[in-house]
Amino acid sequence: MKRIIVTGANKGIGLGIVRRLLSEYDETFLILAARSLEKSEQSVSLLLGENKTWKNRLISLKLDVELDDSVAEASEKICSVFDGISEPIHCLINNAGVGDSYLGMQRVLDVNTWGVKRVCEAFLPLITKKQGRIVNVTSASGPNFVAKCEANFKYILTNPNVTWPEIEVLMYECLIKNIKEPGSISPYGLSKACTNALTICLARENENLIVNACTPGWIATDLTKNYVQSTGKNPEEIGMKTPFEGALSSVYLSMSENVGTGMYFGSDCLRSPLDRYRSPGTPAYVPE
Image 1: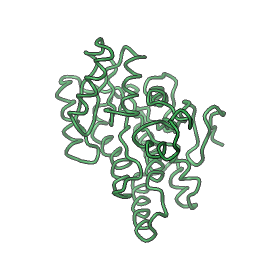
Image 2 (image 1 turned 90 degrees about the vertical axis):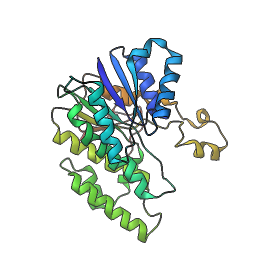
Image 3 (image 1 turned 120 degrees about the vertical axis):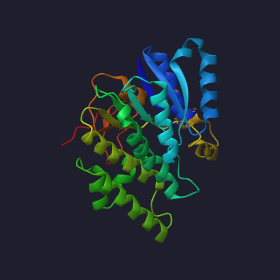
């Protein structure tokens, strides 16, 4: 049985990932992690209402990626539930995220980048060393951000030898710049570019694991609903896909056999560059 943790799994793309894995891979066991245990349990109930045979393949987990204590308690809970299994997790899917929050850049980075780092540090000891996996759900906003960056930022965010301290310094520099020049930097794009860079770092430091990032695509979720409303159209009319469709790339990276490591993938499951957008359906990115 392949046990998979999905953060932010109570709705949207996270729930789509869980639903797709349950539907397409009978050997999976899903751990639905969410800030609220009640919401996680409600999502488990929703899924069981769709298919009662999933009963023995689902559990809920309280995990707030912003809080050290919550992440530590979630890790301890998994150790307790799977007592006696030294490395119980096949894959960690870091899906929890926020958009350009009214609370500012600090909150976006706390969730989308520092949150991923925090969860990875806590759960790495629990991931099987036999081709265990980490999938970081990012966004095309990351490469789009890098494409417009000044040269030194672009170098850091695409460097195959990038380190976490370098990424963290860059984030602090952006926080300071955003105070001096409000609105000059996209918090969301920055956070996703930094998490793509973190993915490279994690892959290099954990050679026994398969660590990748991916974009789900242009998906109808709570993060995009305000934009949809502003257009006066429905999601389908503006080319948006469902969360189930948006789960494709994450599911591919968590389960497919022939997958490399330390890369960023498009919503069509093909490798994409870190510094510019690649349209789905075009050839896969090949480094020079």
